[in-house]
Length: 336
Image (cartoon, rainbow, N blue to C red; front, top):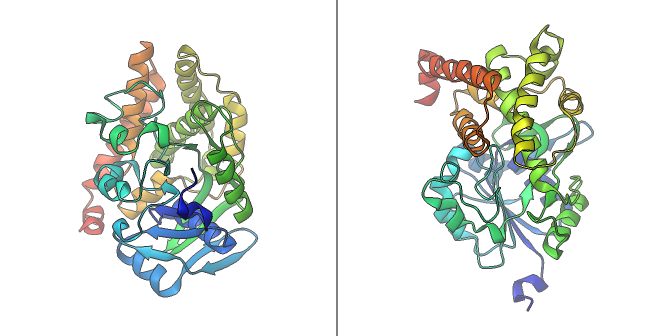
């Protein structure tokens, strides 16, 4: 049975208005084919309410008005909810996310690390302690989505795309081409965001996880853009070794991941001016997402009983870099 609200315009909420959330919300709102809202806070919330949401791409610069709230409970039930928060922010937002849902709401949780729903009917305690996300955002209501969108926040309410290409494949965890995934793909495509339906979205999530697992710690350690890391002797070979270690884990789990590391490296380096998100957070004094990446790696490694020496070394150095940054007086001033 079609719900009454489905006969009118679809409702889409973007929970988190940072670089990725702002990019998606801005495009959807401009297209005007769905009712878009964002959940934001602080200066970002104030800026969107006063000036609108501004999106800058290599080919255009536009500003749109979009409904912005601090408390999701003001919005009511949604058809689709993009959870574009940092991984460590999701736990405290679960009650608000639940207020946006009924039994048919479609959720798109973060995929920075290995998400709680990755193994579908198998809960992994290390990925979701206490199964809080599993119960709040049931896997049956989840679509996988991978954000291949290099972007950064220029100012509150202003996001800029890095590189010429941007897209976010979406897919059902079981590979089916369902009505709900097809409808979302069309909605995003009409807004200007390439969002092909991927019948192996778990492999796409793995590739994105490994990309973040390898490039983000290296960016923290080198403090370089992708182009600077590309041009520095010895950096890309280390990244390649890290990717091969991670992909060996995937193969041990029977996951067919597709493109080899060299093709994925070339794609990443096609945005040479982009700073990886974790370096952006490090420079801004924001909390980092190293812990969920490392937790995901440990969880998968325990499932396969395999070693990842290069990844372990780079992550240990990156964790130390995080610690020294937090102990820096300037960083403490940014946090205060």
